[in-house]
Length: 201
Image (cartoon, rainbow, N blue to C red):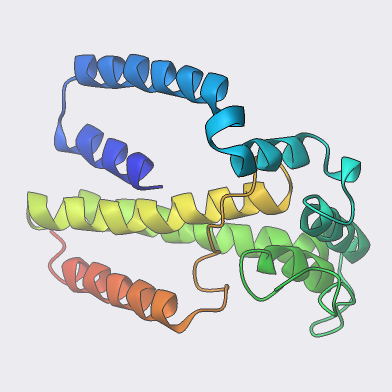
């Protein structure tokens, strides 16, 4: 997440393309080395990768949360079971109010509701880009870009984890996942974005 935000800020800030190429090559080498040594040095990370590739291989262990999340998404259908009528949040999806809240949104509001939630994040991203493009100074623009990319990237990673597109990262869904400190920081960030928008040119 931090790497993604930093890369976008560097790109928007005018960093030369060659630095991105060098960083990409270095990152690829680091990932390759990590894949080779990970099973020995970080066994829990290797277990997480295995449970992502085939959660049904360990349905009562590492794959349990992912499987129950997919069941929740599937049982929502097109229009959902109704707000508050989720079955999977009752002792099936562990800690459903945290990282896997999107699966409960899918179950209660269905495909239509899930698309509406994703659309809200897209609108937030679009508005952030618009504010950054019309910010009165470079600092304000970079500030807005950083906050907007943080929220958008968090949302993308969370939805990808919940749908088992990528391995579990433990990243929460902004404005939805439980957590007072997270919500307070997000609202503070949005307040700063609104403050920058007041000086739009």
